[in-house]
Image (cartoon, rainbow, N blue to C red; front, side, top):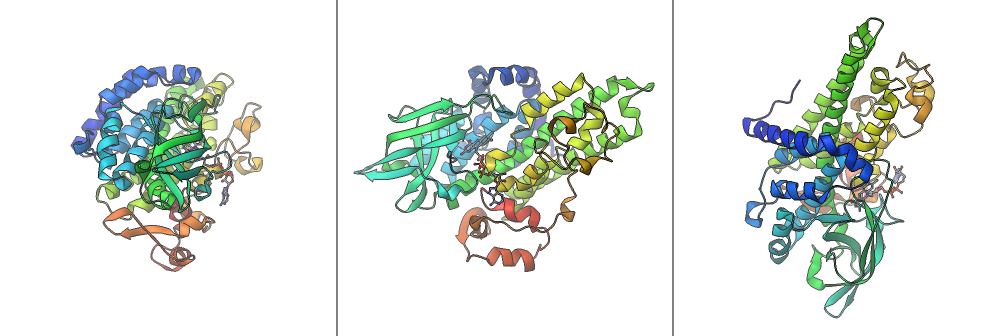
Length: 463
Ligand SMILES: Cc1cc2nc3c(=O)[nH]c(=O)nc-3n(C[C@H](O)[C@H](O)[C@H](O)COP(=O)(O)OP(=O)(O)OC[C@H]3O[C@@H](n4cnc5c(N)ncnc54)[C@H](O)[C@@H]3O)c2cc1C
């Protein structure tokens, strides 16, 4: 069932679909193999205004709403998840500046990002720091009126070509966000090759060796780099990744329907066999449910409703866990198809969850097709289970994702998730600190108790 959209959103969706069908999808394999996104495509994205789609018009952007941003993310991901990840990190940097930057910073950087003259990248993770973002070790030391940065950032999406890095390091006051342009002495990027998925995302390590910037490059208050600046950026990242998963699912559904319509066994196309039909129905249902959750998150964001935070987390949780190997193995398991479908997942989905925090994706990791599983768990799920080419024999058999309501209650193990909550009901980005244990208590006893497994651990922290 197609998602019901307002006419203006439907018009934009059709426009994005046309763009992706013409400029992205046919070349995704080539991008994947070359491990790069061609500059011509990035220039085209900029020319169409897609890189500034959610930046306000006063700063040279298109000023579109969150739903439109989501529709663009979904369509880009349908064609190539790497290209979607460019939109994600670029808009994360822009939003962080918009929310927490000074007027001067907004006027200086946002028009550059909106036009695509500069590509933004978010430099948070380090070799020893992932989920626990507040433990960043990169040093930011004051020297006169300047700041000197030393450290290494790892897994920086589009770090190979980005022009403006939002770097998270540690000042005397605590974690702090600072903007560093490419070209500053002491900044060096080193490509990371041969990723499993989103291989065209030009991921890099960023080395900062005595890299000097002016003090006015600090975004937000010193010491609040994670709780304020990163939180806003990561929330937006979750939102576009959630929509991206919708796009991946749509592409997978289309691929499965096409293949099972074409291939015949026992005198009928695969899709006419009852069990295969059921699997495809499951996929359509997951797609539609994911779309609806994403749409709900988008609408709440557009209304600046504080519920947008948890709605976004739920959308990302649900949409990023749909890759249910059990659903695909029946329709697509043949010697001819397996290499293609494995590549398909690797290209589009294998890295869909990790970039925005580990515990944030604890549920997606739990059902990842790349994670070894108890093989007995899906033994009844597929008529192909005994075949030597069944996916389980290749990468381990995943369990079907249980319905969200059946999940055991979980609470976050991250201290940050207990500290960060919206303060201003009109502005979900405004955060306040609550005493440790408060939100756990609220999740257990307050309104909405029982669904915290979804919103709790994935909503309010990177991890
Ligand atoms: C493709 C890709 C792109 C990325 N892009 C960027 C980027 O642009 N910028 C950036 O800064 N970073 C980026 N990252 C890094 C990403 O943010 C981290 O991978 C993520 O935060 C997880 O950190 P980690 O990989 O170090 O895992 P870890 O934090 O070391 O976690 C390892 C394992 O431990 C588990 N674990 C961790 N903490 C807990 C806990 N509290 N409770 C239970 N289990 C736990 C996790 O589930 C995971 O299975 C990217 C990563 C990938 C894969």
